[in-house]
Length: 344
Ligand code: NAI
Image (cartoon, rainbow, N blue to C red):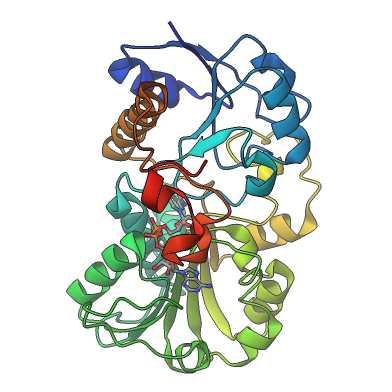
């Protein structure tokens, strides 16, 4: 039986993977994958990794020298993988879609809670304080949502916005021709949106795309929602924009330096990240710990697709969910997978 070392395992991972696994011996490790922990993979065939593992060149070289053939990412995003280092050494597969609705619904949950101050109301009524002063929100009906990235999650979010009677404008460098969406330039999206929601992957090109310059172009009182990747936002510039009233509220499921904190309990510690502490301290910032994917349906989908990806790898067939640095170019001929089923 092939052996999988599963990094950064939580109970919900064990439950979902154990419920669908038939073909593999899975060993669950609490440690995150990094150059320090990659040595644990000696004797395994596959490592299963997640969003905040550090899969840089050093980690990849150690995994490769330990005999690892496949890195199975149990997530959609892969900005934490050095694909150039992995190329021709270790194949990398991912779960491109499990439940885009899980993430889109969480993004809307953040927006609704922020706007109607549900987090504050919850605390008040628990203390039998039934005063509603200071809880005023705005109607979302008729407002303009600017959606950045119109892939699976962006489109699911757009459908929800339309259900609320909102106008939607979108930005995507690869617009979807038959979507009927109104694509605009980023500057126009910044200028016209009452709500801006990020649904694009993190790349070298769009790192900190919401920076001081971008905030300066936005409507006063805009809501920002980020359920994609933390580094899409310059957090210090966001703090300034919150302080000067440009941003009315920020719903964040991700944070640039989340790898040091998210998924762990720091409630007995002094957090040594002042930017994170300042963000959390603001009543108009709602921060969740990268949990947008966390629904029963999504967990089952992640486990099923991850194990199917591993099956496909060992069966020698096409690897539909493989990724390499050439896949990103969108030029069909650039990646070998398009003609030969695998990136290498
Ligand atoms: P997708 O691949 O279906 O769509 C991404 C879209 O973004 C594509 O249309 C692409 O053309 C567009 N895009 C690429 N570069 C862009 C740029 N610079 N500006 C604007 N748009 C750009 O991906 P999907 O499934 O919709 O996921 C989107 C992102 O959501 C993922 O990359 C990941 O970072 C994040 N995510 C977060 C989760 C969470 O639990 N918080 C869970 C799953 C995904």
